[in-house]
View 1 (tube, helix red, strand yellow):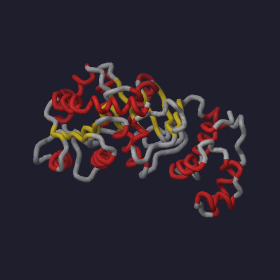
View 2: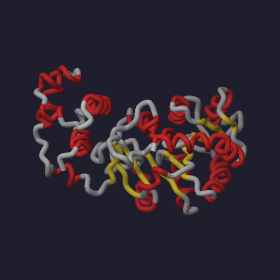
View 3: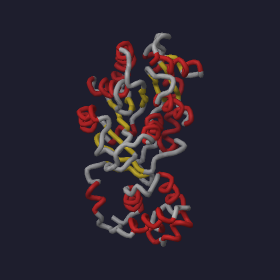
View 4: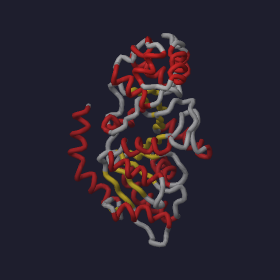
Length: 303
């Protein structure tokens, strides 16, 4: 029980331990043991913490025991830490990788290739749904995997297409797995957790916060060789995901729409700025054919 990964997992359950702090802990001491022996002053000086936060973290750390109740509370979840051999390879390559992931379902999906992020508006047009079926169903038949955020609209529809046609999909949540959001997608959440994979970088007990959503989006793009935006307004979370994909060195694709449609403006903006215009499934397959050799080589090298 008293291993580096268990110490890291224990630290991560505290709201005092941000991702930045956990990354610094690992950088300074991969065994994650020294922090458990620091005084409050050492926590302040080593990690540049405010005094009150350091005092609270010190008290939390002192509660750690080898057989602590944290392990029992997390027993139902698959947990990957960045210290583990089976930590998702693709997420190691992004600028700000998660330190810990919690999951329910098919853990092998994190190694599946090719994987495509599918994102878009929460209020899609009827035409967008038709486009998604025509674009994505042939990819399901080719055993592609879709990554999305289980939100209303495009995200949920991407998951449902994969599930209905017996494909593969990963949902990345913006809160802990004990608090799936949105609540109206609770049935979808349970279906995905049973037959596919649902993951989060936030401890299971943590409720979603507004700032979690843009943080979550970097994992959606990070798990995929490309991000496909189906419909999106000019200022939207989907465009944030597209920006993060570009920052991560991934491809961005966009489906055009009617010039009078507000939900199409974000896609048109992406296309104007270099995103690949997607008119049919062949366009997506062509993009994968162009880069798959390099993509697979990168995966094999970091493996």
